[in-house]
Length: 538
Image 1 (cartoon, one colour):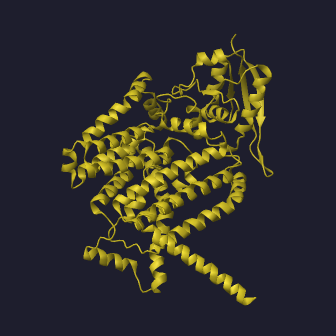
Image 2 (cartoon, one colour; image 1 turned 45 degrees about the vertical axis):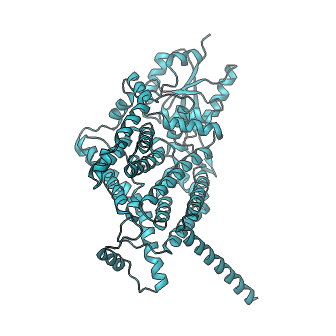
Image 3 (cartoon, helix red, strand yellow; image 1 turned 90 degrees about the horizontal axis):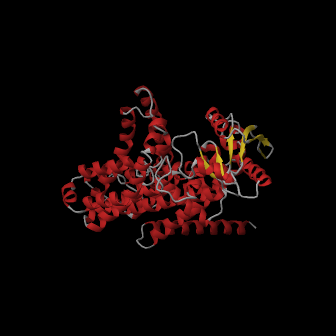
């Protein structure tokens, strides 16, 4: 019996050694490394879609996700607050997948996975394949690419378009021809159609091009001029729309994020910086542990990574790093890390922490590309094992996390306010009164867009008391088709909502509804809704 047990343990160890040897060999192989990275990314997307679905199952989806879904029902050149690309992507996605919570998390993780793959391609231009693999796993451990990436919106979509922009820039700077300029212009246009915030990255790339030692060759080539011209050409329809709506997205940004004093701006900038720096701590710490621990295990403590790094630096050793390309990465990351908070202070803007979501994807590569850093072959095993163990543990604990979140934040998080139940109840209420689908819904974004997502009729949302309406439906069209208006005291716009309903549909049928969600016996908040049913006009 004892011999059999030992044999099983031996076999298990042998399999683990073979798997580890395969990962080490594949990570540095020109043919196998792409397959290894693609497999890692696919596993990350699938596992984190499952994790988010389990962790968030007691909640409704975030209203940003529902808003993107609503935008995607119509192909417009802009949607009031933002350029159109996030809505277009959601529209394509939900023509292929069902309108369900899990599909929104799958969309978010697919965007994240695509961004990881582009970051891999960027890393291959800067470092060797082993370091590039380390970079990708660091991104998989970066909370922006897992837990914080649950919410598909324009901020998250930049994790796809901004890496594409950086890759196109590196390609254009190296090749300096017309085709590379066209690709850079296309990437810049796609980024700007995601969110105007990408101007920070475009500005950082422009400054980097001016500061790089090889700037003269690039600036004299046709690539930058072709890029600018093609980007402007591709953006012309959106710029026309922007003028037609009297630059509404810029009005929205000014109304929402402008603060009264630079002291307030300073406070928000400090919070923004601290928040985004804290998110980087986990991947950086685990990568440092892997780089340190791997050779220590193999040499029983005789190897000191700091001494080895110092020795490499003093000898001018540059293992696996293309310094000319790394300069781009260092400059871009430094500029986008420092520039936005300084700009927020200068222009008295409240820095939203989520604005940092797309701006630090180069940080792992910037660290890995430090020439003095030695990356042992076995470091890729340790970092991959850390990702696997951490992801597996979170997957196993997902049901407990869902219960704990419900118990701790059910009465403070709007996601527990049972809007999905309200959507189904209102769909039934409409069908009992009228022989047609529910066509439109009026309310705040947090409520109206969730009705669009969760109702089987997917009514078109509008927020008539906001200046930056999405443009999906006019008030006149809503009046003709009929709609349901929703107000609740839980929303800060309650007063505006009720005032508009009473002024524009005084004869609407008035209902009071209450919703409450229970999850595994834990009650959510009781929410009262004021409902106004405006019938279709004959």
